[in-house]
Amino acid sequence: MGGSASSVPPDLLGEYQELTFLTKQEILIAHKRFSELVPKEERDQILSARVPKDKVVTLPELRANPFQHRICRVFSTAEDGDDSLSFEDFLDMLSVFSDAATSEIKSHYAFRIFDFDDDGTLDRKDLENLVNCLTGDADGTRLSTSEMDQLIQNILEESDIDKDGTINLSEFQHVISRSPDFASSFKIVL
Image (cartoon, rainbow, N blue to C red; front, side):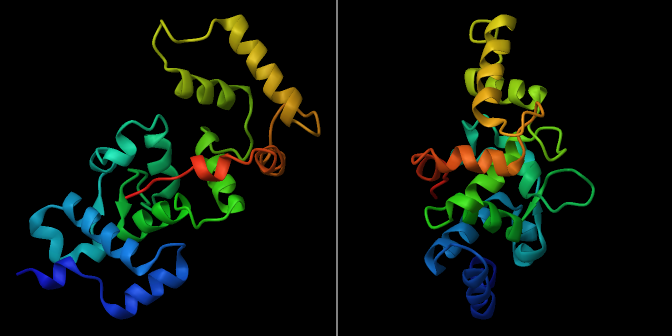
């Protein structure tokens, strides 16, 4: 029953494996998980289906992630800006967050996720958003203005090599290269 809807064609399976850091087994598990998010009447067309962001963020792997909405934004190829994910978008996301992805790939996507205004740099506002995501945005957990200013100043002093008041991708990757735990902590396991 529903065999074609629950499997990936062998030629596509090989292609997905070549284009991602995922094993065939991980791709099949991802396919199963993605198909569970797609309405039953659309499962026979799963490779062309899109899952709304609101459904994607219900996955246990993303539910508690403070960057869940940014993750969907960065990996979505939806042209209308709704941040929905196709199966290939979903595979790309899982590939980047897999243990097999390189630190360079992980840091590139982390930078994009943390670049809240999508301008190619992490400025003071991006850093403030980043800190608020990590500490919580509630009154009890939010840093005071002076604490936030001091923390951002410390981050910029440590990371802003060219002293232009922002962190670019190269500077970000330089900082990440000195953090051996980054690659192992930047993952999603299915």
